[in-house]
Length: 525
Image (cartoon, rainbow, N blue to C red; front, side, top):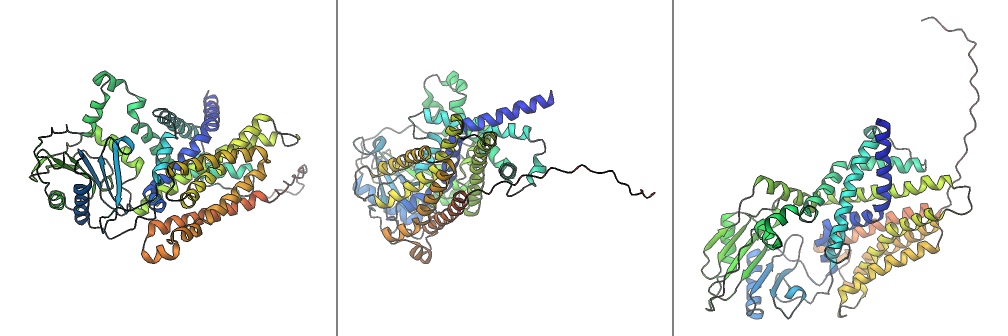
């Protein structure tokens, strides 16, 4: 019975890994990139320059700009520059402008003047893709959440299947073909197993309201907006008094926040009814200051008098637990070294999925090695493996090349970057269909090596902010992107070289000779 249970778990591990592996590979890869989404956005908008951080001065600049350009708006939002975001972001509600009725501008954090930055979704595209898959709401979220469940199921069944899992962690036999892939799959899986369990489970916690909505519907009915208002502590917007009243200086209110919470970093500032007697301003602490999201980490002032009206609600134990899982999943709190560790573990998770797909196919190809043509179902898996892995890497590189080559003034420019990503990915599928499997792998990996390796040069030629400029200027977000692209290019070149070389024939073992009985006398002990 025990062996039967393990075999059932192995079957479940194998087939769920295959059916959802291609999608999970994309979710994990783009999710891993999302740990540096702000840095990717900075690279994607090189017109926004970095300056020394001065939150109070930046607030003064933002207030002056909004009073001059958005005095008619009922709602202002300000996002301060940070160690990761160079721009001073301002937006305001305008039913006739922008997405969701908002107009957004990026200001230079030193001068307060608008920056004419190229239209790009930058890192936000990969962040949104990894849980929405470029699908309409809520279908993409449903699918990605189901994939998270499948990933969690795959981890549990993998633990059950490999009863000698920790012994196998210390076993690696290079140059052994399918055996080497299995050893690598096991070793990487064990090394980052706690991280993968946390990521998969926290994905379900993040979308708990979609996965298990019965409790919410029973308490709130169709008014789910009230649930989120209670969850995040949103206050009702005060009614407009229609009495013009000047705003208190925002830097002075920022100083009051610092007195209440010394050293607190502010994520964003929201102003309601600016210029009215009933104006309110809310300072919300940056998510980088805590692992868990805290509703108590905000301060609301009367924007006319500067009086502190209230502070957010403290958390219950249950909410702290849920918000801690969300914070651990997103990693906003992570310092640079920890963010790189998140990135490395994310790459490892992507590799576990990829090696699993390769092993599934390789094991079955061996059974048909003497046949002239591979069975159609195996050929389909081979094509999907190539397009979902090397093809996705080409699509990512295509997005970045489009960012640099599409003229800045083109209308709908950000959409064209996304279209390039999808088009390159589709072309990789066509190429995988037309070329033999090993050649298709090698050619796509070689092309990936070229396009990633040349990204730093392209950046320097088109923006003047290549490594020769970014490193002396201390712009490590820009330099780090280019260095990472170069490292990816070198790694893909190594892989392409192995794939494009003819595989070595496997030497057949000579049959063992029968062991002759020994005629030597046995010494008495």
